[in-house]
Image 1: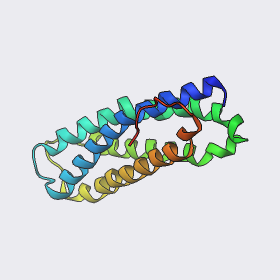
Image 2 (image 1 turned 90 degrees about the vertical axis):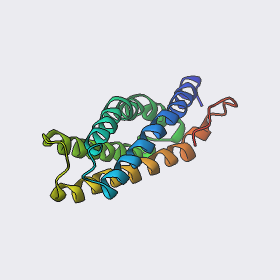
Image 3 (image 1 turned 180 degrees about the horizontal axis):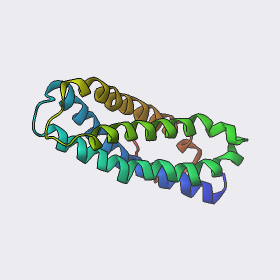
Length: 154
């Protein structure tokens, strides 16, 4: 494993703790929408988790796509070795955009009953895709770096 690729693996492994924090807030927000969609704190919680998804998670995923995955192509034998992970990045972005679309169209303080099912599908779908994606990276790519002092990612 080239030293630069090892450094990238360690960097992105270390960032997964922050992504997991956003993921916990995402799940909390989804659960709030599912159980109390009329709660006045529901829309502000959604706006905050969406802001964090846009400001923290999407840049992390985009940087992996630009830097880490190309660096892994050589050690893994081809660009195809990361293609399913790249597809997950597309789906993560699509679901974040879908949540953002709900919020952009939302001018009043409470969720409408007719928008809750699609919003829940996007929230829980993103939760599932992002959780799976993190675990796949942690199991398939991060062990390639033998760094003993790499931060725990789970």
